[in-house]
Amino acid sequence: MVAIILLMPCLIIFFVSFVVQLYVFLRRSIIKRSCKETTIAFFHPYCNAGGGGERVLWAAICAVQKQYKDVHCVVYSGDSVPAADILNNVELRFNIKLLRKIDIIYLKSRFLVEAKYYPFFTLLMQSLGSIIVGLEALLNYVPDIYIDTMGYAWTFPIFKYLGFCRVVAYVHFPTISTDMLKNVQTRTVSVNNRKYISNSKFFSFCKLIYYQIFAFFYGLVGRRADVVMVNSSWTRDHILQLWKKPQLTFTVYPPCDVSEFNCIPLEIHDGKTQILSIAQFRPEKNHELQIRAFHTFLKRLNCTTKPPILVLIGSCRHDEDYQRVQMLKKLCSELEITKNVEIKINLSFQEIIKEMKNSFIALHTMKEEHFGIGIVECMSAGLIMIAHNSGGPKMDIVIDYNGKKTGFLASDLNSFADTMELVWRMNSRDLNEIRINARQSVSRFSSNKFETTFLSAFQIIPI
Image (tube, rainbow, N blue to C red):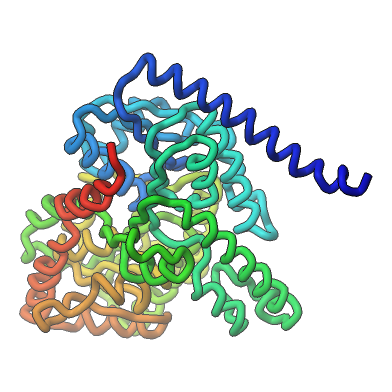
């Protein structure tokens, strides 16, 4: 009797797996009879969000369409937006126009990966939720090749073993990293480690065990990928530690469409007083630090004529992001700098260009930013970049080029305020030298370079 009870879960799992595999086999047979093209499905539930990750998605699809004439692309999306509107937004926001028609496969279960539903064990619950979303995607459309461009590694085994797909991963940042483990171990307050946890030895110990177990399984599912692409040196280091696939892991810097930014005359920034921030309104971007550092900077200047203005540009994915914007506006009101701070949401590509032309400094405050497409774009546009001294900006982007400065790095409120003041007081000749060098350095991150490296890594997968 005990043996039967112990055997029951295994039998249930086997039966469910068999039914799903049979269903997938039949669906694939039907698709293959009606369509002889190779099909590639991109898993990106927030494909209409308008951030750097979405630029990677659409640039990757464009690259595949250029290289492979007989390949049909589909996108698994949780956005309840008509396909025509999604593609129109892609062109407006990213200046990317696809060569051929694609299909959008709409997912109803996307809410299962939203953090707001999981106040506790968020990473685990989101990952388990992604399995259900992945199953819905697979049962709706069975591709030949599955590409995850959002970081849902727990979907890999589903597509590999139930869908018999070849699996490709483009990783923007690991779901869990050694930095997160270190924050818990050292009881440091961070986005992923709340104060009440860090203040308790017991809770910190429990969370560390939880993170270690999660990291083990994250590595297990991540290793199901046939090809792994990472967006920066920082991400590569963490993924190699967790997934342990060095021969099949490639650094593919995100596409940064610098061609139009390069057309902005560098001298246009002389005499401007606007400071620009480009980042999605997400908690890890730390817009609050930008506002507080700007407030400190303003107090030091004590300007009476033409004081600097901070403009925050970004996209909002859902209600939480819009609520975050309201909180930022409230903070500006409390600091009495409302007239010096503007927040602009979901701007078009051309509107962003206009804001860049009106600015002279760019600000980015996210700690351990995995890469930073907005940083590259601002440097190409001729803005003096001030980014956080960590992650991709520190390792890949705001680094010396030809032995000369390309921008500045800071780490906290005072150092960001100090650097803004330093740049504010620099003479035009020194500023222009940094602008020229920064623009030359970011040619490493062009859209053409992305296409070449993406397709080079992708060629490992036979089509």
